[in-house]
Length: 299
Ligand code: AMP
Image (cartoon, rainbow, N blue to C red; front, side, top):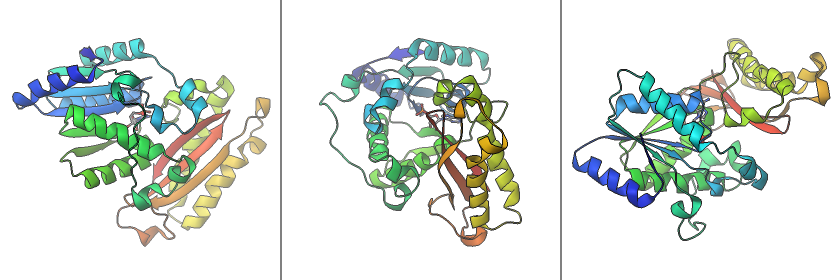
């Protein structure tokens, strides 16, 4: 593993690899790595000759200043996790991993980028209207990373389900021949989707949080015999009233922001289970203990 902090060094390492005909896999992250990120890195190491993992807290995708300031920055621990993962793997294809850890100035030398991306319907639902500018900020950094790393494959987690649809739309717009590789959510043993935000939960909130996934799993079973609207309403009601059924300390409660059942590719809400040929996905955002958690379930 080699840590690289400048775009010039990354470009020259990539040029060298390309000259040798190596296939590059890219894993964009904001650091604070956990097993979810490591699953993407592991897959990239198995499927490519060289892997670029970026660790960059991208300021322009945060529409909430406090969230940006509170975002954990743990580069040394992250690099150790990656190194440990590499040494624990026996059948990896990649011969080199570059950990790209640029500063904000290095990534945006001309100051805050002015380009704005629009993706139409896939960004007009769920996270889009609630986090204005978020997906455009994601697209700016991901495109820059595509330009720098010139990957053959790029790995993204289904935890950020809508982000995958946005990257698919970005690739269509810019017509880069990059294979988008969606990777399944990695969960804690109790079902909570791993997230760097989980470390901001109090112990009581952390103990309550697995109810999100448990509720979604029950919803998937209900989908066998209930209508889309009934399943939606049940999920929102179950989480909103959770603290009444299970009294919590400190007034802890779930505050769902949305739960939508959508087409797995277009992300447009469906009204009936057979409204889609792509499969249906339930996407949720819930506030708990001042932390915004997201998760999905496939129907
Ligand atoms: P982030 O650092 O949060 O921007 O995440 C970097 C990448 O890791 C994104 O593609 C995420 O979707 C993915 N990711 C984050 N958490 C998980 C998880 N629990 N399981 C799988 N992928 C994840």
